[in-house]
Length: 519
Image 1: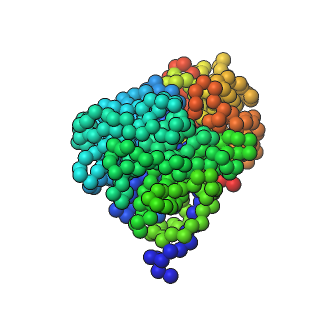
Image 2: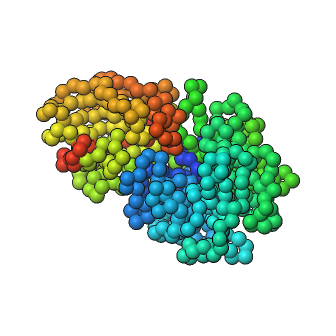
Image 3: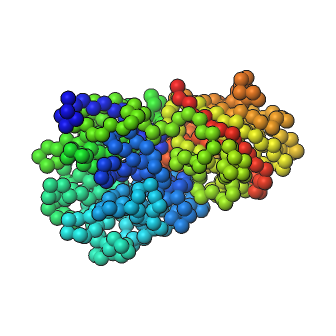
């Protein structure tokens, strides 16, 4: 059968499992490129590449130096919100918001793997800016403004070389009357301008809506129903919205968007993930899934196929297996805020990852020594080999599953009152509790966190054969749904850490490898 003939295409949702929310996508030459929000994590804005919209590989992070992104003092779920990715005349543009930093800005690159430019700031808009390059050479910024039910979209023209506004902002889109009109994108398709945005907040009422006009500033005729939502549907995927559209090699359209795979008890430690679905056009309107259930975990559709990657059954966005720390850290690894200089090294002791603790610990809003990667499966096992002999009270290192400052579980070794202790600690809603403590003289220790839909099991071993259970923490307490002080927009991140608990630590914590196994 010819590759140009319609065929059955099978793929699994989500296409990016784990905490990868607010996707934005663009096609450039033979590939598709996709970015997601990163909030307090550094480097910021992970970027992926795919030849077929199914198999994705992370090729880097857009914001990978302090001159682009300074997260000092930013709390969890602050930082980088909702990037939008665009491609025009050989250049890539990523526009986003640093919500407690420099505000709205964009960066550019000719190679999407980087390097990207330093930020070019723009003057107007609240969050979620997007760029649109019109046929006449004009470039528009569309951005969210206001809050809650007053949330709307503004739009203005800019000089794309400087970011200077060439027109005053105009209100162009009020949404559908619901709260939080967010993530607006302007498109021109078949001669018509389309304004698409999310509405309803990023939870049960989340939905994607759209309007159209003959002019870039509208007025936009709104389609009376959402074009994407599961808000009235009993379905394993919920919270659908914050979408972006892309046209493929054959002129067919697709949408990427966030969604959440809730457990039976109504939470998910994985956070908001990236899903994909076909777009169907009807009388000039795009349709994705308005409470129909067509967005599913296992997708089978009739479309013309695109290129087939060399590893057709693998999604390289899921980086499981062992990391031996023999080379540069892969792009999936990230820090909480910008790391202190010298706090993390793979050259101090070649073949291992070396961490040095800072004054701040995992419950602090500050510069902490933590390196981790997104949890991408509910059923998984994470194991590491750590060599660490603390010699000053307060020094501590180990393994951690983290949501934010208010929710994290860790196990490892610490020094307290002149004794070295194996310990496990659970922090839930900002309250920390030691659940295991025992004196040790061991220099090397194997640490393990096992995750299930219900809980996390913490254990350690001296020989990687006989494991001692140190405690169990509930998964719900790590989920974004269990927030107290402010909404949580991230998901679970598993990683390695060190701290001096009030003073810098000069004792190295060395990790020989890190295993991520799925069941």
